[in-house]
Image 1 (tube, helix red, strand yellow):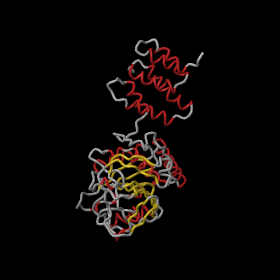
Image 2: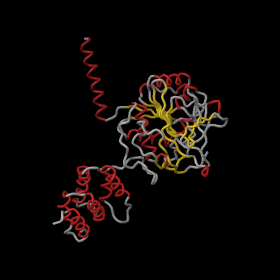
Image 3: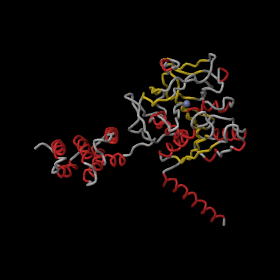
Length: 403
Ligand code: ZN
């Protein structure tokens, strides 16, 4: 009897692992929201989508009662999750819920503190140790020093004054401060972030905290004239906390949440908080110093999606998907074999009777520099057609070895 029971247990265990592998998801995330001075009804589903896109998470949303409601009814079972995302700024949790949360983190649970998540619970000591730095909620010198950079030195400043401030929303440069930390290892040293509030004058205990990135808070935009910490990694007990002060949400998301820099650091920070490591690749559309990079629907464009749009292209339409294909090839393809993976997909569009001539022209131009002998048969076919003759012959001249 006992042995049979054990076999059933082992089988059930294997089935669970198998299912997790099938979905490719290893971690469960819980986004805690329901009260915020921000538009949590828009931000929480976006954060959920962004986490699930990684293929690493399934994400659920836990809504608290409305402001002034009975907080005793709010008791999420934190222990079921690998990471808790705080998209919450509101009434204090019950003592029972606070204790459960502290136990969860102490036992190794992961936390992501998102934007105004560092405004909440000014009176809760343990929470302030977890977030490191916070603002608003009458935070001041009693809550800990200001921390910021002057040139490249970290300043710990105990002077009196309010915690939390921001100037006008604008695009700003983010500067990596700890390039060896898994969350930002491999990202550019500096990049342009989509228009956002630049949180400043944060203050708090700042214990067991590594500042991963900061940004200069420009006085011309109503800022402090200091380099303010915006991405932080902390530990509390056995738990790991990723704190992102970025990501102010508009009704429909807006540029701060659409920013690939926000999305990528959020995804990487959540994986690190859940597991202590980061396995995600840096996406090819990560912003650089040449400008911000936005994903209007929060999703990374796919090669298949780009090619389907290019196949319907005519000159009245935007070349966005073609530009995306070009960046993808330049970023991802390193060896001739890599280029041929793209080339084979592009050839399929060239061979398709449904694809437009304008779309084919774009692809042939691209193939003329990155293609190989694989494209020669289809180009020879297309060269027989009046509309594509010139561009196909141009590509053939570049791809065929000189006689
Ligand atoms: Zn905000």
